[in-house]
Length: 184
Image (cartoon, rainbow, N blue to C red; front, side, top):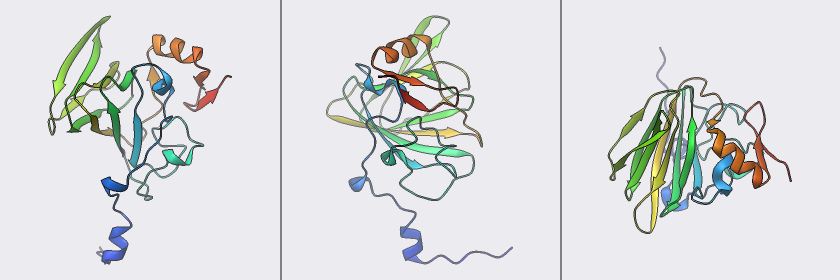
C-alpha cells in the first residue's frame, strides 16, 4: 500500500478553526420551536449533501466546513444559549455527545417518561439506535456540544410526533426523503 504524502498546506485544508466557525440557524425541523434554538456547525460530513445528516440541504451554511467526504460518520457542533437544544428525535444509527463548553442535559424517553443525565465538559455519552433523545444547554453563556453520528447511512431523522405537530404550526415540514420544506 502506498502511503500518501500530505503537505502542511494540504492538511490545513482539513482543519476547521473554532474561532472562525459559523453555522446554520435552520438546519433542522425543530430550530424554530421555542427552547430548541441553536446554531448547527456541520464539521465533517458524508460525500454529498444528500447523504448528510442535515435537513435544510439547500442552505450553504449547512455544508460541512471540512469539504472531504467522510465514510460512516458525521461530526457537528451545536451552540446554544441556556435552554436551547434539540427536540426529541431518533436515528437508525448510534450517536455520541460530548460537551465542550458548559453543562448539557441529555434526555430520552423510556416509554412516555422523560429520563435525563447532565454532562459536564468532556463527559461522553453513547446513545443507542432508535430511542427518542434530545439535548438542552443548562449552563451559563453560550454552550457548545460535539455530536458524532455514526454509520455509513445515517438515514433521516425521525422526529417525535409532538415535534412534527409543533413545527407544522411554524410553517415547516420534512418530506419523505428527510428534506426540510416550507409550507408557508
